[in-house]
Image (tube, rainbow, N blue to C red):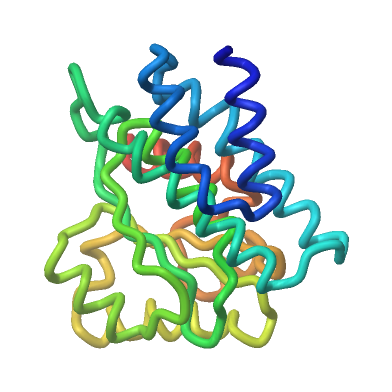
Length: 213
């Protein structure tokens, strides 16, 4: 039953069926399926498929947003289970899509992977202003601040965030990482970021390296 329901949950997210994903996640947990298994074998593959459909032009932004809602309905069910037992936080990370940009599939995948790897992650959502990053950092004291952008026109907003922290004299209190289709390691170097993740998994490895350094 477990494998069938995992596939059913993955398909429901891809098919934007937000009404059933919460129930499927509960059903899997009740059957003894571990939260890590649900994350890795249903939720993350679903987001990968959605990202591919969007990249290839088969899904448009409204479709993606509905998929994200379906994903969120199931992720909120398994999240407490991911932190049970001998859970000890490996660090604190703030994530957000910069001002002017409302894309969040990549950010959401990184959020899920970091949570699954034992980090405390605060998702600030999309269209996040530089001053809002600063205010939340002061309030939440993260180790790392991750910024996402899918549009070349919003890339400068990443530099604005770092410049805002610099003006406040807080630049060296945090590590800054960036990700998204138009950005690169060269761009990260140009704006003074501490690292660049080519994809969500490399973003996780980057966070681990920065916190170990």
